Image 1 (cartoon, helix red, strand yellow):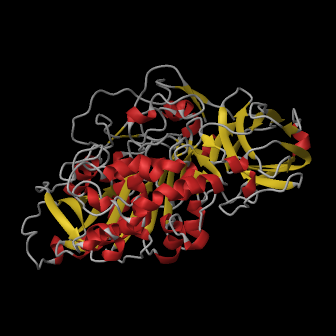
Image 2: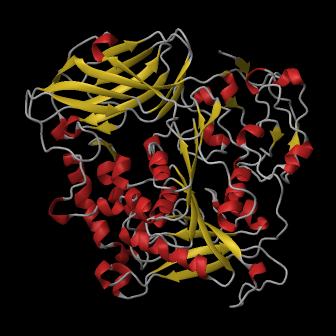
Image 3: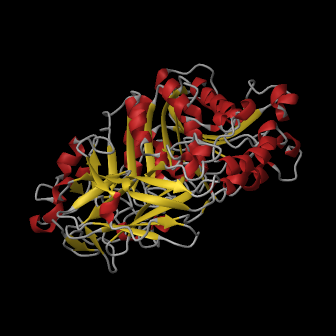
Length: 619
């Protein structure tokens, strides 16, 4: 069933004026007819029901109004504690030794943090002995940007710190802004997620969890680089790390910049060209930057470009020490709340899927929030608006989650101080047209994996000889409304014409030309993953097991999909070892689509106010 609601129509939303700056939770008064269609006649909730529900589920919030007048989400109910003055803290990191160079040579390695605590009557934060009623949990954002692209660590940061401090300190949480080594007021080396940086983060977590005012529980949250530091912290199994909230964070540095051997353009210079300057700013600490990790970056970037792999020859561990997921699975004892933009071209959504299932399978409690935004937070209007068609535009403004501050409060209440009730675990997923639904895991347990023979896709060619030609393939029309939900795969049989190898890029679109997703492969890595061959033997047939980036796209009955194959696309850079033409055997190739059947009854509306302008959503 296709049902459309024009944006700004009173069919779905009631207009309202500006709210007071204090967050207020109210219930919109809708008539039954206004809630018909996708949201059903049972969507109206009385204020009494809301008050009785400690944790309104995401699908129970559509008729609630949240404050959207700030640049970020606000909690529905303000906390009662004033915010104390910021404290400047230097945390010693004794695990950094002379062997690590930098500040290890002088034995004074330390990370710097700014700390905000609530003012609680009868609690003296300077006391070494405090009653349990004074103990508070801590939420920390750790990253390289304090005084390097944002304010210093003693000023509420525009990225996330201000939102955390203003929302959660009044609710009885401490909030810390922590600079990684070589940035802000932290000394030692800018180690780009290496072992030294990981030790510094772990030391900060331990310090925050062992102070007289701490209840012993620390949560780490952040986006991008700041969303990668939670994964780093979780590799240690630190008993004080109770939860992490990585937003578009890295499970590993090599995993970010190489996909099946194919490198993003920034890959070869990521350490020294992109982040190296953070540790070199003309002060007395510059000498600390000349540590082994920084120096190794000059070699390992170009080497990985040429090989496509992790360059572990002769015991080199530059990339393996910057790979976090396996150590998290083995050591971590907390919970995970993953947040990912499904249209993120900076940190692709393969950092969330199949990671969700891998974390879940390890017995770690996990929830994921995945929306059709790019490299951004769930609640930033400026970052959601203006995305290109096929990369989030069709889902806006339904991408905006003004309930996110409450969502995090519920999460931190439970996992940092065991208050409220446990949040329902699973995946909140938004499709490319804006509809939200909840799945118990992802891909969903009832996913149908539909296999289609390559020859049945009417390919327009059987060879890729130049870097400019393309081959198109078509499947459809679909007999009913479906969602392609997960990671489609295309196992393509090729025969390289030279021993240099071959490279492929796939882009999927619907019959209206709307981009749906992509896949990329250096065919030396034809089995997938990070283990490849130095070269492929010319005229030896192989099967490239290409897997698309995670996608959640709605296909209407009667529509088709088109897949275009070229030698490369977007910002992927084939190495000289992956150059060369090849012949395709479509009869031995198979496309597999993960498909789920969902209807309007399976979707829910995220809480939001009326938006003007043109546009509609498919539910």
